[in-house]
Amino acid sequence: MTIARIVVTAAAVNGTLVALASRVWTAMSAAPPRMRVWVVAMLVLDAVVLWGIFERRAPVFGRIVSRATPRTPAIAVTFDDGPTEPYTAQILDVLRAHEARATFFVLGARAEAAPEVVRRAAAEGHEIANHGWDHEALPLHTPSYIRGTIGRTSALVAHLTGVRPRLFRAPFGWRNPWVGAAARREGCETVAWSVGVYDTDRPGADAIARRAIDGLRDGMILLLHDGRSLDPAPDASQVVAALPAILAAARQRGFRLLTLSALLAESE
Ligand SMILES: [Zn+2]
Image 1 (cartoon, protein in one colour):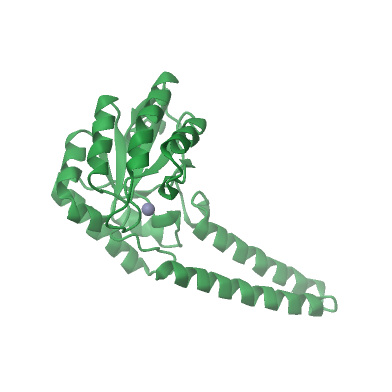
Image 2 (spheres, rainbow, N blue to C red):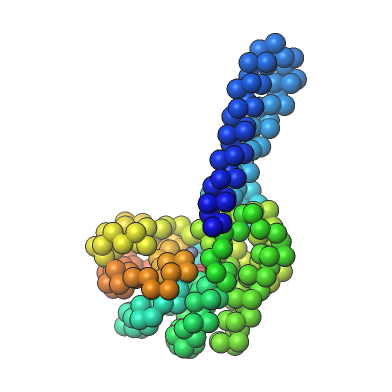
C-alpha cells in the first residue's frame, strides 16, 4: 500500500532527523557557529520539502492553482474519484436542473468501468479532467510512472469524449518535484482546490451543504467526490443530496457555475 509506504518513509526520515538533530544539538553547543547554521538550514530544507509534498497549495514544486480570480463572480464545482454509478448520473441531473457546469476529475480505471456517464457528462458541457489512473499516491514515484498514469487516463478520456483533459489534480493533492512537469508534458495544468468538505467521511448531507456554503467565495474551487479512491462501490448519496442546496446558495449569491477551465480562462 503506497500510502503506508509514504507514511513509513516520512516517519523514518523524520525520526532519523529528530534523532540526528538531538545529537547534533548537544554537540552543537560546542560546535562553531557555521556548523549550527548548516544544521538549521538542513532542517528547514526538510520541512520545506515535506510541506511541498503534502500541502496541496504549496508552490514548492512549481505553480499550483488552488483558486481563481474571475472578472465577474463565479466559482467552479469539481468532483473527484468518479465516475461512480448511479451517483455521477444523479449529479448530472442536479447540475442540469440548475443549469450549472462542473468539472469531473475522473480516475482512468473508473472511467473505463463506466464510460457512458463520462460521455454524457462531456456531451452536457461539463469538463472531464484527469485524476490519474488508479489513485496511486505519487510522491515516491518516478517521472516516467507519473507521466504514465496521467497519459493513460488522458488517452482514455480523449477516446471517450474526443477531448483531451487540460487539467490534472494529484491524488490526495500530494506532489513531488516531477508532477508538474510530467502533467505539462501530457498537456495538463496541475490544480488543487480552495475548499474541501470531507464529504467522503459521509458526515451527512446537511453538514456537506453547510461546509460548502460557508466556504463560498468568489473564484473558489470546491472539491466534492462522486467516488472514493478506487472503491468499486462507494456511497456518494450524501453529495447528491447536498448538491441542490449548494448550487442554489451559489446562485443566490450571484456566482456563475463554470467549468474549472472556463473559470481559469476568465482569470488570466
Ligand atoms: Zn481523489
